[in-house]
Length: 220
Image (cartoon, rainbow, N blue to C red; front, side):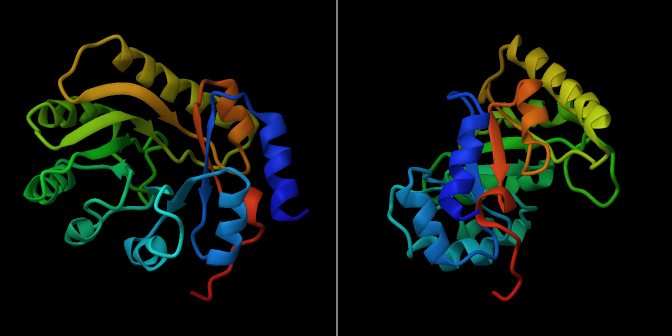
């Protein structure tokens, strides 16, 4: 299938209230322009360098999402360019975001990335670290949290459901509390191979790359 057919297929499988993030890492501007012209304006990149290369090549109303691990020394480059940092995963990174965004008087919108599978090779905070991070977020002036994000282990439908349910429980519990600088509007979970399972368990934002663009290319 081509990109348009892929988007039609995905849209037919998800409710209107679920936002699609087109994960465009390694994909050319020409393909991204097709996606944009077909009505998807949210694009997700994993690396700051690639996002910056593409930033001026698409219309200004594109909403850029940083999905991959954000190194502290790269934060200064994305101020005013990224609409949503989906990978806030530590207090040290929080402090750097607060410092760099405050220099320009800009609010950094972010999601907290949770390592729900406790995988050593993945980024994200552990559940028991969440409370301390929330306390530090409340002290910020230029960081606003809008929800949580996770990349679950790839274990099949039964295990998917387990992790997605647990994330929904965490998200829902946080929604019931009042925090400064924190709201729980977004639950970003689900990718090309598991987004339908994620939506069943409450996701309202899915990150789809291969399902839109086809197989990834690594020639950038």
